[in-house]
Length: 167
Image (cartoon, rainbow, N blue to C red; front, side, top):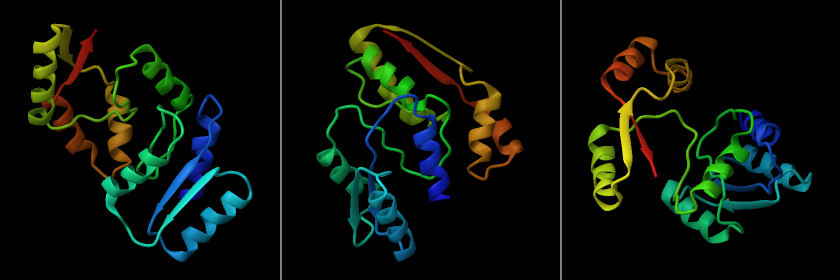
């Protein structure tokens, strides 16, 4: 799966990039594969951790080591959509004060999102709306890849909404 993920990342980026991999305490077989990818020039920066530091610990190392402000940081095995990187960079360049861009068609718990969005609205008074902006097919495809059922997803999709903020 790691090999497929890395190939997809490189093939679908839509622009050239240097690849930095942080191995968060993987088994010897994975470390050996990553080292061979580095030796073959397919990974430009490889950081190996003796033990798993958790996502937060890994991010601390990655953020300190990265060369560019806009650095994609996938945190799981996934397949990448065409032009995933070029489109994400376009968002960051269009909105330079953006902290993070995700291409995941994911809805977080309303209690967590609403608090942040309401705080932003009070500060900037921007135009914002709620609705179903993520197409059902995209939402379902992503969540099925996580092992969820279509029935579960129909319920979540019906009971939750996306937020669109226009600056």
